[in-house]
Image (cartoon, rainbow, N blue to C red; front, side, top):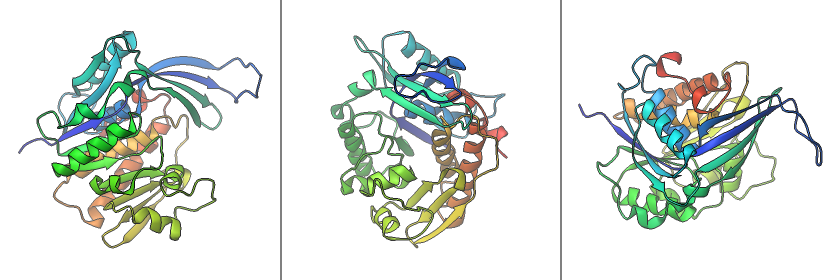
Length: 320
């Protein structure tokens, strides 16, 4: 049987991570607890999550799925480190473009030690050199699933969605950082994964105190986008899955863990979910998809128990 292929198309960044007891006030200088660097970017994080969560730590080259990363880095030390890190976990990096004269994307991450919550400032750099005309078609072979975010230019993402629809390829879309998109963009999306703030932005409900675990006009707006499988992550309250063909939905509670760092939790969820749906790709029933969501929720919980981004993502044998 052919091993399924996931194309992750998106950002590749170097994360500069500062940990602090609290956030400084305006004009205030604080001494941080620590500083570190690590490979990141939502695209790269999700690719690593797909790789790790389809393989055992002891055999990183042997997995249930193949993963190809498509994106761009600068011709610099950060870029070379990112590509090397992807290759070390068995990801095909041959479609990562090395851009002369561009800097690799950088994410400045501030982690508040007590809560584990993070705040991120992103400088896209080479990520924004990925343009729509790079995707008049997709590099062969044709993938079974495309995973997308919004850390590359929006017009490029929309072009990828058009091509995916033309080739009838399943798309898993995590529109972060969120912004309002044309409604017809979602016609190409099979699986939509958003958190509560992203759900609010997509539906024009920013600033409203809405409960996305409950039904209402706000949830109806999200369902009307037309995706078949809709997932809203609810932080400490768990995750809501909606099978819109029903529609039927369920809420799965959060795992009880000690939170150290939430940086790559969402990306871990996306990667785990991608692996789970391809592992059982002939069954798209509500029950089977619910199992994929539950497993992704468990994987994300493992990530928040650890510090860092890609280094915090668990391997498949660590998620039970």
